[in-house]
Image (cartoon, rainbow, N blue to C red; front, side, top):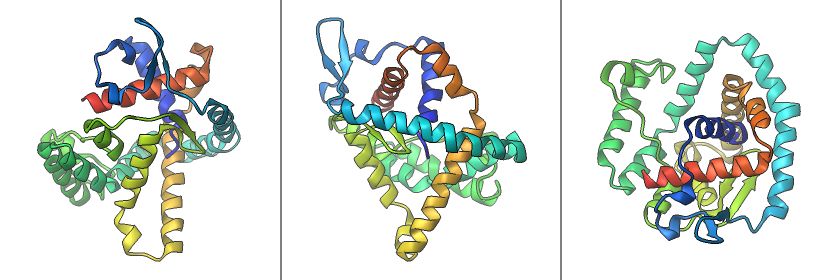
Length: 246
């Protein structure tokens, strides 16, 4: 799933909600993705900016010339309720990492809720196209990943890193993403080429569907931000720091 436009969505929420900057919050220093420059000023820890800036530009061009046109055509064919259903379907498939990471963080209630959500939404919700567990039982999803688990135990986020196609990350979150991906049961049930084909199709399909739901968001971020690279970077780091804190 492309994180470039997902981060744009998060940034819109941060700007509109006027949320407190992460550097103004009390945090465990090991989890702090910023470098101190004084009592009231911090800058993101970005020692690889010479790599990250070109990769960020590459992702923007990828979105402009490939992902956005495909998502626009997809949105014209698939109505918005169907797009939301596809989004819920992909989230339902990713239940195992959420369960495991909830357990690793000691959130047993969250793990149980995710198991219940998966069972109900798979059986009664058309394999996840409908969130019956929330609408009928009020079982809200638990969004946990291994990057958050590492942060929960005080592992530093490390340098900021922009990944091709996936967008903003950190060293900790990149490692966490790899661990979460390894939890996919298909990795152990299918041949290597089948795994690459299926996972590649899922990644592209999820990215196109999510982009189609947010066609105007990235343009809005570009309008309100003078420094788009810095805005996306800060929005991502704030969101991840808050996720670990919660």
